[in-house]
Amino acid sequence: MHLLSTLSEYVLHCEPLHNMIIEKLSINFSCSLDRFRASPVNDIFCQSMPGSPLKPHKLEHLEQQQEMMKMPFRRAKEEEINSAKEEKISSFHKPVAVGTSQLLTVGTTHISKLTDEQLIKEFLSGSYCFHGGVGWWRYEFCYGKYVHQYHKDKENGKTTIVVGTWNKEEHLEWAQKNVARTYHQKDDDLQTVKMVSHYYGNGDVCDLTDKPRQVTVRLKCKESDSPHAVTIYMVEPHSCQYILGVESPVICKILDTADEYGLLSVPS
Image (cartoon, rainbow, N blue to C red):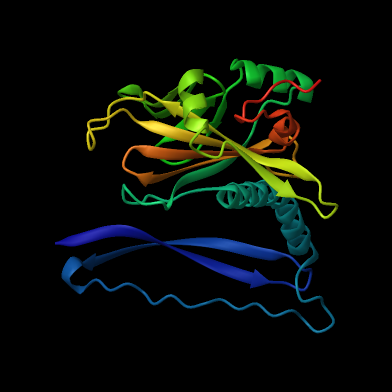
């Protein structure tokens, strides 16, 4: 069996006028398939004539144009990589075994850029909720209302677990046996409120304990260059008994309003 085909060969001419001329030669050939062998490929090296530049002027101009076209895409790619690095640093996910006090999930997000006064009012009224966490489970905390753990799926929609709901009487009873308000001692011997803790019970029944879930919410002041940043993390020291940490510069403005039970109010 024979195969009739066309072999294309390119011949490169280097001329002293700094131009490269490529000629295409077509050769018809016939050969047996069992005897066919590919021709060896040899590299082509082009040297400039004495007194001429290392590269032709037109080639240098073409390379400069190509480099200029790449720059916007390169900057966009670098910004995308830097953004991904910042996101990776600001939030991460670490699964752990149930019943340990290790960190479950933590994430730093940016809350609405409302005025501080308006944001504080909406937060303390429960109309503005904090969202946080990364990975499979995320968290929603609405002050004086509830703590939810949820997962969004394209096929099954949103799955929500009630971690705890607010009941003032239950919290007051809890605060009599636990520390609801923690102080920070300054150098001038003045005390400022560092953190308040609130009890949210009556969550969804836990399969491991057959008891309702419960969570202690710790609101802590955290200074930051971004006044609207909020960090939310959750730990599980005991099965279905959680601690939700919420840290933000916004909280710094309302901690001093805490009463003996750790309850907050709008600053006067």
